[in-house]
Amino acid sequence: MKLKNAVLSFALTSCLFSGSVLPTTIMANESDPSSEITPHGSTRVENTLISVSYPNNVFVGYSSMISTWQKASSYTVSASYTQTATGTYNYDGVSIGLSVSNTAGASYVLQADSTRYSRLGIWADLTVRKYKATQIDNNSGQVLSTWYFGTAQQRNTYVNVVYQ
Image (cartoon, rainbow, N blue to C red):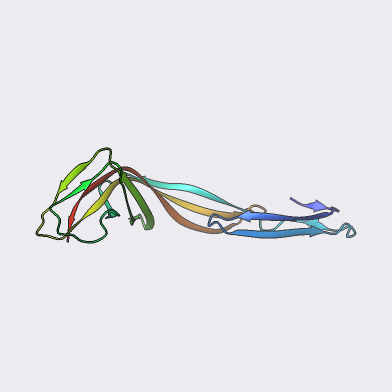
């Protein structure tokens, strides 16, 4: 967009995919008859889905319910307790952060070998997606940068005893 002979004084804010905000101020002076203004700093990010995968039974991490290794004979998981675990999953060269939760619908008991140290672990069936992000200058159409990122959604979660 080019403006000629315009009085212009405002702030243009562009937001990059990474969440950083870059303020850009564009000003023109009416007394300069040859002024042509092309806004700068205006970009967009286009995300392209590259692939989708459905891995099952991915170990995410240890339950937040038991923070240390124990010599327990059983673990009781109650309906009023939500367990969470965080971890990472590497998919096609992209490391994806995971955070899953499991809320039990009723109390249940998981038997454990009391002679061994154990904890509760959480596994998940996932839907993972890999994207290619391309940052493009709106004025020139030039590609400024590209990067890859991934997303993960839990489909099912499982809790079981893990031994040291």
